[in-house]
Length: 122
Image (cartoon, rainbow, N blue to C red; front, side, top):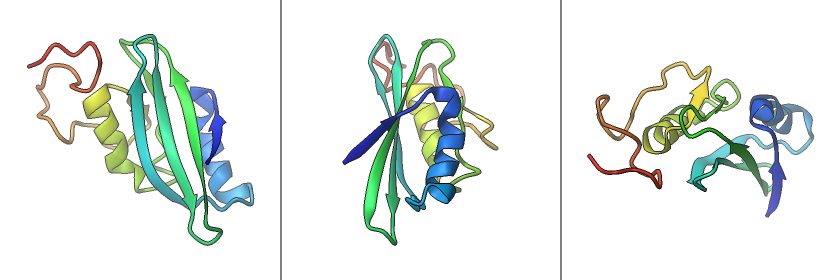
């Protein structure tokens, strides 16, 4: 599977380009996930083209454990809404510009983000 690494601040524009202008027609956001590497987070976007039957993995490294953030891609793919909320809830990566970024699997007062390697438990 093809992979592309981009800077965090470029995520939204690169996603828009991959969907609309690149000719790849990556019109389907399969999943957004995140990995905690302790010194940084990696946010991973799994993209696919239904009509062209191909896919791409887009990755970005996000540094800073206290306030990791990347631009939201909800305006590119509406399906990113719940996926970004899940990554925020479980990993603590903020999606800047998300219209309703709040917890989705834990309650609002839940202490921390349970899939982080440094999570101590509730």
